[in-house]
Length: 101
Image 1 (tube, rainbow, N blue to C red):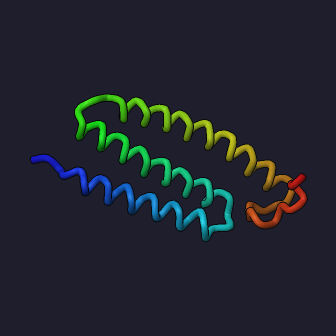
Image 2 (image 1 turned 60 degrees about the horizontal axis):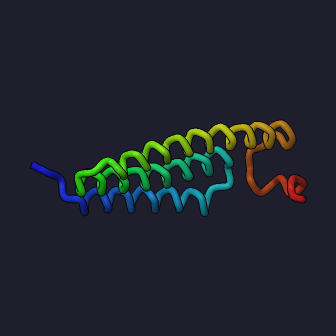
């Protein structure tokens, strides 16, 4: 018994909405970073579901590239968060107004 593609799209929509809500409402940099990761995982669910639906591997290859992008984004994001904490003793994204140009 196969799961209809609409269920995957609804799951992806729910994940993306949760991630978007987290990005728009959170002030903690770690939670902000985790919300972006949830949004990327929502895109991965869509890519893999449509690749399975159409019977090709293109979506799965793009999902692998997206996972590599997410790993690089986490590495850079955690570096920025560590500098933010070292300079301001807080990970609130609204505090560092001195880090602007």
